[in-house]
Length: 414
Ligand SMILES: [Zn+2]
Image (cartoon, rainbow, N blue to C red; front, top):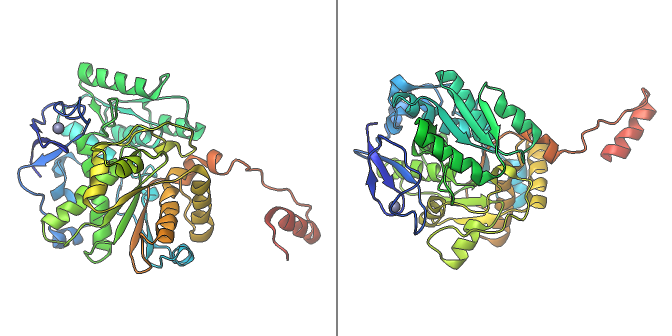
């Protein structure tokens, strides 16, 4: 789909797409806001063509900012929408479903961003990819950059789980730690300006979110959900948020479908966060997100003390809400998903279940609602966070010895 430039998500100001911006210059001193892709015409949504192609992100190429020649693919997208009847019945939402983004090539939704952002970088002659990351975005950028033959620099800190650090280094990217998270953004922005490398993630403080081209990749989550439901929208979509790239991309995707007349409304979008930035903005009625204290969270992929303007806007315009989930509820949800539905998810990816439970209890979600939880990432990445007691019990090799271990360790009486 031909791109005419970038457009500010807040004030609507338009900018040429021949360089990168770090949020809208006109909004920077008021309420920092990201830019989004601006197309010459609303993206067409030819659902018959889409249905006739192989599953995956690139079946929706008409609605993406890169044409077929620039594809950088590892089999991203086409993830399953799974009914969760056991947990749904338990919390009073029989129509509960999970969109399992852990089945992407590097086991998170970030592959959708990286695939499109790297394709955009290549189509625009960029010399490399730069990303600030706590894990998933860095690994996804590194994998797709390797596939495209571009160098990749991942700026991180040493605060994240060891598995995540090794994961980011697995694809040959240059991974460098800096003292603080904002240091990463300052350097990312400087090198994007000096070297012309594509800044895939946020690169400014206060944060505005990821590169507009990458966010377009997340639109395909919305297309896939609608397609799997027979081109209908669910009642609510619950998404873990840090800077809300997935949430805003999903919002844009559903908006495309409404504009093209494929569906007649937006689902309510629910932002699920580790710190109450958007929650507080909604209760206070502020134009932008509120900066809150980072009081400590084990859900490191979403542990950001400030959300973004566009995530707040997507929630408001869809009639949705924001829910803060603490560590204890997140750990309980993570365990319930793996032990009751067979879904091993990162702690940050489990929070939609905790939010669904809370919204069902308050009546904000009703028993007849069809509710989609976006499971953003695999639980193999932070097992040291979610399952720290990992020693397997040793049994004497007799039935009596086995029975003792089963009862002591697992509470199972034979
Ligand atoms: Zn603006």
